[in-house]
Length: 105
Image (cartoon, rainbow, N blue to C red; front, side, top):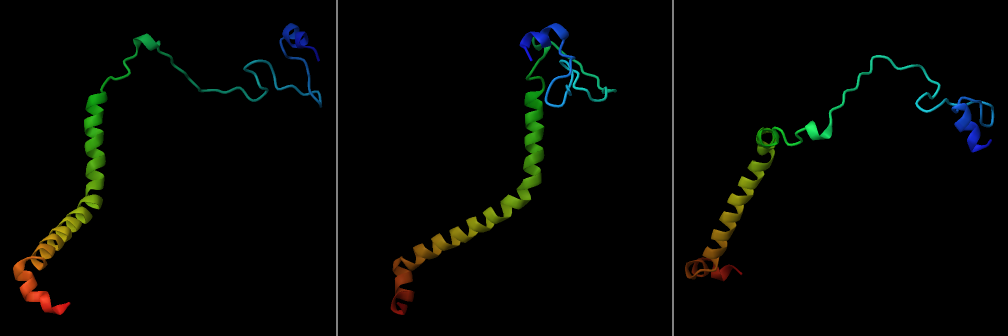
């Protein structure tokens, strides 16, 4: 096979090990596709950030509202537990706390 054979014949000649060829450019021997419509728009006519701020606000709110009940309660519980532990630690290390619980160690 010479490269010029494909260029001269348009690539429609049988080639390969068993004499089968898939087809020319864009025609790979399968069934013709029907019902596929494609549209194009020039890149200088598009506005890539059209509505981006509006969509960002409402998409962020939608995602936040779906997840807040999974995230907020553990954080609130942890916050109150840490507040209790910090106050308890300060009390136990104060003069009154040492006087009350000093002999237990």
